[in-house]
Length: 625
Image 1 (cartoon, rainbow, N blue to C red):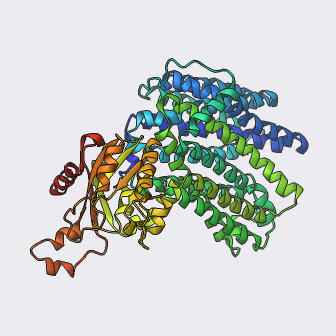
Image 2 (spheres, rainbow, N blue to C red):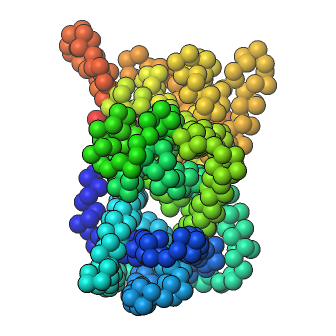
Image 3 (cartoon, helix red, strand yellow):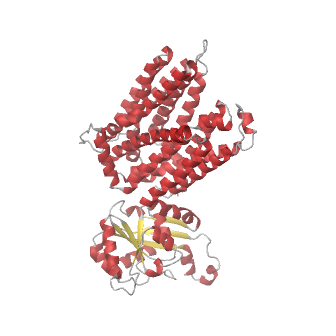
């Protein structure tokens, strides 16, 4: 069962980092949006548009310039000390920003924008690589969910507060003073919170800094490519930011031209999107039972596409209002659906991204984790810029309406994520298992942390039902490739799952004498590639729950390759009931949602064991319950 993720907020391992993150995002967005509103309303339209575009670019530019350096520094030095330095620097940036706003020195304000972007670039690499260093693996998904929630809440509140306070900057009003006080106060509190972060020793203290960002980025991407889940998770996250930016950037024009609403409607839509993303992030821990569950990624991807399509089609039939306020908008037919689809877009966005961040942190080597995260940030920025170019192409050159543009982006999202999932079937397989696994049975587990987190290994399990591959694929966090007996492989019930998991059939063609030899070679090749395999050595389902004789193939498999072998025993509450003294009565009361217990034993080397020894180990595990 998933633990209450909010308990992390009561620990020193997480709370100071969370406070530091939220306040940094809040103050940066308050200043940014406050200044943008000032530029928009205090300058000529052409001048303000130019400065706003330059300001937006200066916030993103540091991600291209300094992400490579940020990752290397975070791996080389103590992350706690680095975060303190970054937060102390933000106090100085805030002071300069206040001076720029009071003196209306817009060139200096642009420098402040660049400095805030640089601080964010450096802090992001340290922050995301610090999370797996401070939290247990079982807390990783919950920690990322809370950080994601905090980031979006900080963005929303900072945007709203900055916009509101700038409205009180006319002669005799004190809006700028309030902004100054809040900016310095949050920066100081953020620095004090960073001082409470526990020590975070460097993961690669002997690292030599590579000052060539392009060469270093290529090297890190090559290292990430050697771990496909990390590599494709990076691209999936970057694509999400392209999609989100494509929608988010159009909200002002969408509100004005399609909905016919005023500035209050813009704020309302931004609230729906932000709150939705925060809710989706928090839902991840519940949906995944607190584990790093890649199966949530397809669910999020499909939800983003469906919400985007629904928003596009609904808004295309929306009767445009005329500078409507909130009351007029709410009284108009279809308004609530617009808000619902915008919220759902955010919810599924949170479900999509949180597991991806957790997978990158969990499966990256600790020595280069911060560097991989930093390069991911660089790609995110590149894709966000690409989103602007895509918007210009469709909206300005091709003259496509914004609702149609939403539909196009939603369909593009489906195509791109499908290509990513095709390269990494783990996403689809675990996604297909997610709902059946939550509906068909109730599973609990013991000792599965003994399964190696990486590298070749072989699971040996007893076989009590056709659901066993589903149960193991769901409860074991690593991607499992099954070795299936022909009767199981040809089962209509399991054929889809086994094909999706690229199962290896044992001697599928019984008339071909070389069929089994091809199977053994396929198993060797899979283990050479560092995969986790699973075999049910009984070859058939045990009707009474007792272990059946193992097939002769298991001896040959054990002999050919030296890898860790993990015995696993599956227990069914129904099977235990049926073996009781009141067997006939219990059969009529078979549970609709059976309880299954998965117990893993100590790993043994394959060359140091045999089928009889493994059978005894599994039998002993079954006796424990």
